[in-house]
Figure 1 (cartoon, rainbow, N blue to C red):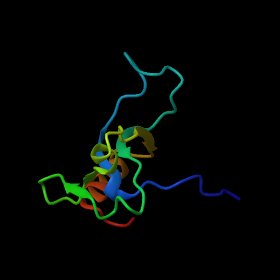
Figure 2: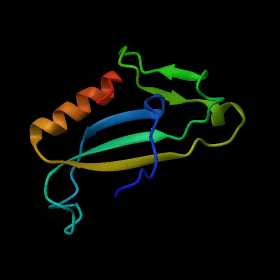
Figure 3: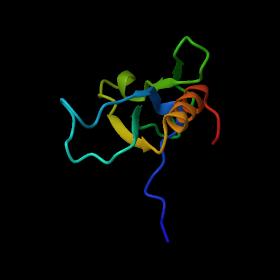
Figure 4: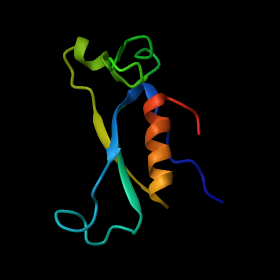
Length: 101
């Protein structure tokens, strides 16, 4: 049985796009599939009310909590491998629009 290892809040997502993880400049041991990357910031419950919209109306925001106190906001990149090009496109669209899957 698998257990959840963590969550990324959509409000903390700052980008989502296709990625290269194998081939030239990539990881030669990367699994086969259709990769995409999700760039995100950790947000806390106090940061939920301090979000900036991306200007596209897509609901992708950046937490500003650490910026106001002079600390850097931790930023991460998650690489995800989809089973097909269609599935990758659907994930990217859904994340950008803030839709539940």
